[in-house]
Amino acid sequence: MQHTYKFIISTCLLFFSFCEYSQNQKKDTVLNIKKDSILYNSYFGLRLGIDVSKPILSQTDDSYSGFEILSDYKISDRFYAAIELGTEKKTTEELYTNSTAKGNYIRLGFNYNVYKNWLNMNNEIFLGYRYGFSSFEQTLNSYKVNVNTQYFPAKINEANKTSTGLNAHWSELMFGIKAEVFKYIFISFSGSYKILMSIKDPENFKSLYSPGFNRVFESNTGFGFNYSITYLITF
Image (cartoon, rainbow, N blue to C red):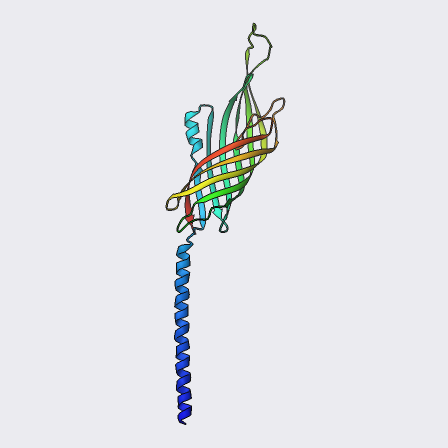
């Protein structure tokens, strides 16, 4: 009987010791999770903002006016879905023509963050891609006939001919930097290399400017720059 009691008591002590060990292990696991969550603190949410360069350019350049809102959403540790919506109006002066393009555009794509943040940092050095589409109209304000002589100057002819229903499609390769200057407030700078895929020109004239793409050259390529301020809405 004594051996039986000793066996029961030993078994109970072993059981309670195991329970205590398990509780300590759980506490250690919770502490580690808390430490890890602090070490790799990263925001998930929707960022909204504006391109501040366009309002500034609108105030300093009489031939331009524009406005753009932009947003991105973090879908994984390094990938962000991105969208930009904007409107632009630009008057282009060339040697023999003066024309104005006006319309709206959208750019859709993603950013990939190649920068590994330190403790409690949420900055980015990113590579990105955008597909762009714009719908616009173009007005031929005036033109001059090339008379090919300096003795009889060409006369400026007022045209005021507007062509509607124009559009353009393009791709953009992007590189940029985004920094959190205050909690949930980010500033960023990015540059893009643009490749025009297609554009609809007016009849008997060429589209010289496409909103969202910028100046249209014969090479069908161009560059763009973006300075933005965004605010993060966390989920």
